[in-house]
Length: 452
Image (tube, rainbow, N blue to C red; front, top):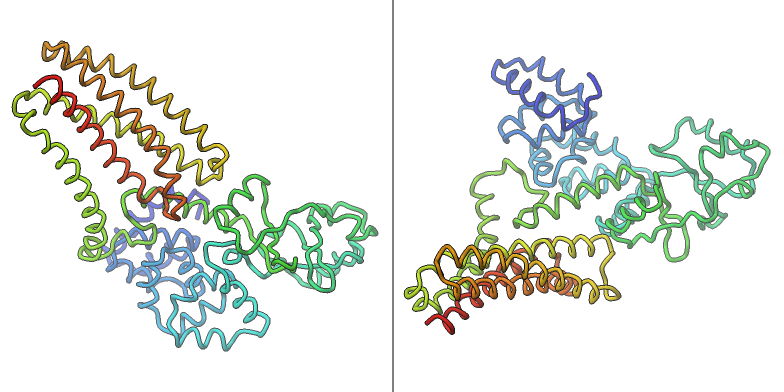
């Protein structure tokens, strides 16, 4: 099987899978599936309806089960676990690394958990307990306690012999962690230095002492930014007493980045990245109904504002034709600012020290764009309805709404963040309500005052 990127292979895998299912060529299908990487199988399982998913899951080699369960989203994982017997789940869990086992631990049945924990060594049990004592979206939840530690007072030759005796290194090991006799973190020894430096040198003379360690309570998004800023493959995690707890590797950080991107994208529509795309109709409808209800409420607020000026609209029909322009322009302008500030907050680039400057900058942008497009719309509306007054009114309303949109786009995410609410979830709905209400109220209000 060629190493073509997963996203390029998915459609081809789905096509072959559909063909094998239609022809009942299960032996060929089994061979095709088990030739894939576990992450590719997980992606395939998420891309097919539940009925076919159960068939494919039954063809997966048991030794791949655990890794696949780690890769799929929460809802799909629950369905797969329900269709797997306890013996296979126990065997699959036993093959997982501690941090991966912690990711699916709470999803496993109690009977399976009991057997898995009972079969673990005391050291592995303590490691699992350590990882699970932290929030899953923190550095402690991401870390893997499986790492290689060495003392500073030995020579590189001793370290090399020790590694050879181990026979293998944990995945993504680019450095060894130097600790004292109390397991306090002192620094790191890179594998490159270990292999290229004079083997007679001591670890203390070769190690890097300025490699920063992460707190286990640090959020996963902050961990991702730390890795990005320092171009790391792995990083140590230490507690408040500087005791080395574990390490975080770049493969876990890549998962965090992808999950955060999915979360931000889907939350704007009130969806969850852990939802099953092929979940039953009733379940999906219930989830989306809540978000639709919230949007309906905001739509009624905008409709109520329009209703306040119904008499004016009846007298001047042109207002009904033109008023969507004001609301739409405000919505787009506000969304631009909202996205910019939300991204800045996510990257820790926006805070108390620069929020006011950013707000004034966005207000200035809103004013300039308001003046520009107000002139354009005023000219078009004036010629369209042969009314200079109508053109001036919609131009004025447009300036008001674009300035308001810029202000709302900058302040809404900052306010939501202060209230510990994700701006990506609620920001868009609030912004739309503000721009619609202000847009309709300003345009229809001015028309009521000056044209009736």
